[in-house]
Amino acid sequence: MQVARLRRLRQRVNLRDWISQTRLDPKDVILPYFVTEGRNAKKEIKSMPGVYHFSIDSLLKDISGAKEIRSILLFGIPETKDKQGSPAYRDDGIVQKAVKAIKTEFRKLIVITDVCLCGYTTHGHCGIIRKSKVKSQKSKIIDNDETLKVLANIALSHAEAGVDFVAPSAMMDGQVRAIREMLDKNGFDDTGIMAYSAKYASSFYGPFREALDSRPQFGDRKSYQMDYRNSNEALREIKQDIDEGADIVMVKPALAYLDIIYRAKQKFAVPIAAYNVSGEYSMIKKLAGGDKAREKELALEVLASIKRAGADLIISYFGKEVLRWLA
Ligand code: PBG
Image (cartoon, rainbow, N blue to C red; front, top):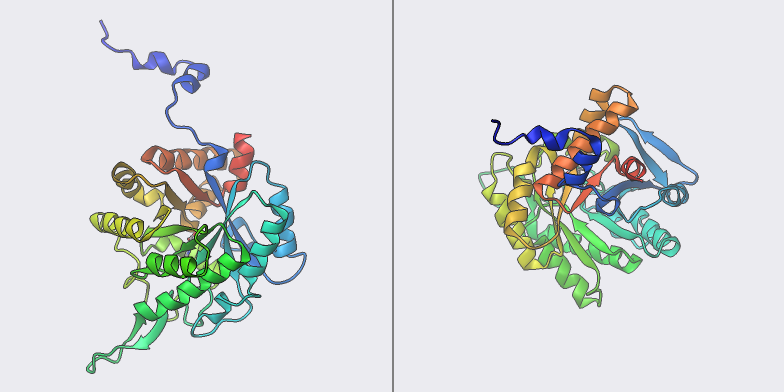
């Protein structure tokens, strides 16, 4: 006699649904949005079919068309860049204006902003550059502590605009503390921090960098983003961010880092977000080759794997479609 007939519970769809362990909920999905200057603009990003650059007015329209939408993650495309990334913390910067407009129209929407320099600097790095102090070296380095001051200013300008959470993604040591202190000092103790804690130096960011025109002009990001051969280090990064005041921590990318999500979930009691990044999105698009039904199956399988690993929140470029699929 067969001891256990595991197929018994797989026979029909009603049984499979009944005992299913993982459930993707519309509330779990965070929609990334790219916002640009201009009016009435909606321009598809070449490297990310189905994802757009929106002007603020078009963005508002798009949000109102997405039922069940709970939260968005906002990236700004500034008109000008400089060495210090100063367009990132102007009061009338693109993100600041967008946040004001969005929060005025959609009060209950949870708005999160990416806090980084790479989209705002001419050199495309996530920090301030200076010459190495080592005399024998002529190399340029990313100055951690100078960058912290700028990140804190960016976060403050977003908080003043009314954002709910800032999401520092520069991978500078101490960035969560620097931002927390700046926000608290200015009375924004209710503004939260969703920290990109375990952010790996990944080739899966390729399409995004095209979207933001944020490729580093020299070198790479490996001196600040994590080495993909390591996992213990991710737990140290996450622990440090929690100690510095992060409300939510993030693992990024998601699909190639499910073990990190799993370990983080087992170890820490904070909400875990996972970022299913641009290259992971493009992979599915390519594999589906324009077949919408296949795209849906592939995307739902990938998102379920991220949930199963332990993510509470998932940032997904399929976001709007996911909301439709789950409706
Ligand atoms: C900014 C940032 C990046 C992504 C999110 N925030 C790019 C990078 O670090 O190069 C990548 C997102 C994606 O690939 O979908 N630092």
